[in-house]
Image (tube, rainbow, N blue to C red; front, side, top):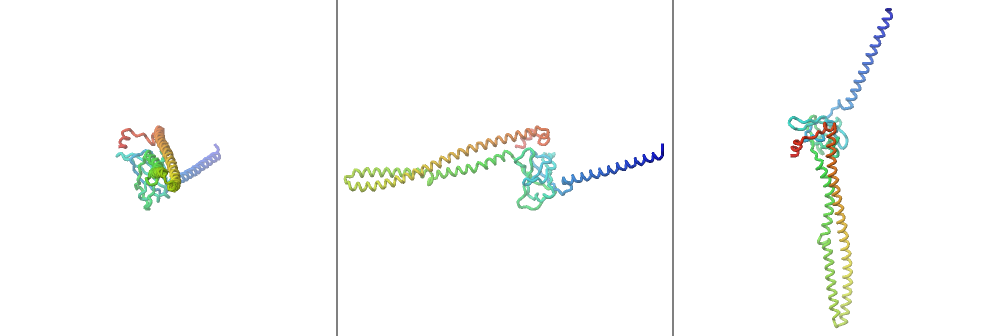
Length: 301
């Protein structure tokens, strides 16, 4: 073989290897830069705040769920586990720029509006300004969906019942309500009866002039009593009309209460069905496994 041809092949091979090494080095640099950018994007190099929490039930909790403050995500749950002693412990991480939100006395609550894909809500202490440090504990308050729904229903019903009771008390007031109006009507009728009896007695008086004078006086008095009777009857009609409106309002409140309770029962049933369907799914059995009957009964106790 020609030596010059061998030299050219050797040179071409060396150039190919050199180009391959350069391309490999560039690819490695690009991959390292991309990895560094992704790590920085995810906050790997940030001075995030790591906190611990404990709870008596891990229901609706999962690793990776968001931690929010007034609707804005500020961190996530990093891990949750059942210890050998039966306690449920977990850790969460807040982003560096939100560290000052976790102050002494702050707490966590499970978002009441969500069951699947729930969120932990950070409740900042209103007065304390001392921030928590890494590995400090933060309280996780237990959440009862049925109790929360019941409280919301009662919060809506109580003001309506209070208004109805106030109207009923006003109507039954012995000085200004319906009993007082009926008493005025009765007194007016008794006075009218006495006046008629007096007129009848005066009509039998043989002294005609005296009778006529008394008749004029009686007529004027009767007119005044008639006017008073008319006013009293008008007041009575107004009170009766108000009573009817109150009864209609009471009926509407009771119907609204019935509908609210039916809606609450339906929501609880749908919530339980949604949780069961979620647990039956492939991901649901891992995130929120169904608890054994013995564990459920012991937790209720």
